[in-house]
Image 1 (cartoon, rainbow, N blue to C red):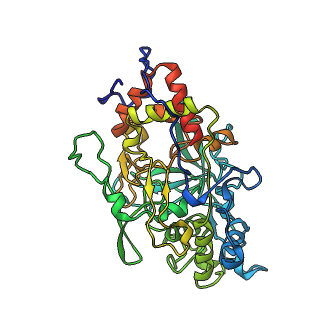
Image 2: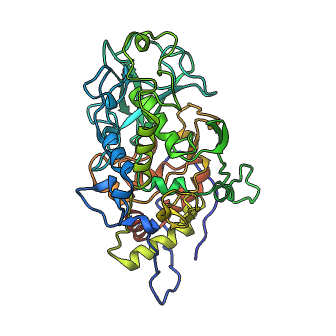
Image 3: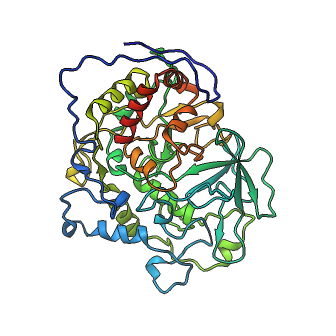
Length: 441
């Protein structure tokens, strides 16, 4: 089998020289275990990306249904007719979690007319992690009263790469503050990823590339709720727990306070938060936050879609051969700490190491979060990619620049340059086999 190595240009390109890869001899097709262990289900259009794990007795877990209702509900400004669902804003991006995490697929983000939608949000920060003094650390594109902080437009500056521009605002960003786009991820299997022991993630922590394989992934150590922990959620791995990720999204995206984030997300220059009524102290109770957490914890993973076993198996071989699995680690095993026993000790195939990696200058947005710099991104899980690509508004990478999986591969740089170059010189039939695999996992 031909091996590939080396680093190259940060710019996406297509090498005209191709190499055909001879797959290993296999007398039998590969045997594939369930992708999400006990949480694996067949895909259903009517439930799509918010389907519960199978055989769940909702009667014994009433908080799960309550959490779903809170997740899909439209929240309103206080005082509202439903006190459980008021407190929105006054500065926000969406009035429902499900506006950004659709039941049916990817939320709209980069619109063809150059506008943006809630499927993409914008962090505000400098290369050393400082927020904008007036607008804070995230742009709020909606408001319950008066006007929002601003909106963002975009244009393609080549090969699909978006250039973003702050508009509809009288505020100038501080010198050095950049717009950091963050595409809303799908929530497939997030409860399983919550259960991966830190020790397992740290097995691949190699910031100085001591094994000299060209990969220097590192754990993002942060402090949350008074504890030092390894981040695993969000594009920059800024949250260690699913509950923390939910609380951060409620706070930054919807303007809702929780016990984890008790202060309204306004800067000292913004009086709107103090001027408008509060929905409570906090606006989302701990019981409600825990219910949302339970709902997300028990979301299912969709079984593989294998229509051509030979092509799928060849694609899996190629995925490993060109080094994609150095970061997109195929197999993880959950621990035994979940309150939901069905999630304990499960072998899953999420294709992530949950580490930060330097993805090169072309994917840098110049915004540091925690100690993750603008070039570093957490390896996103790949399960369900084909479903996302096949349903409306399919976009990939943190800023949505890629509309297809081949485009996403072509933008890989930094630590993944060698794998991208290996992809570029594959024969067309081998590229197609690799895509069959990616679209089926």
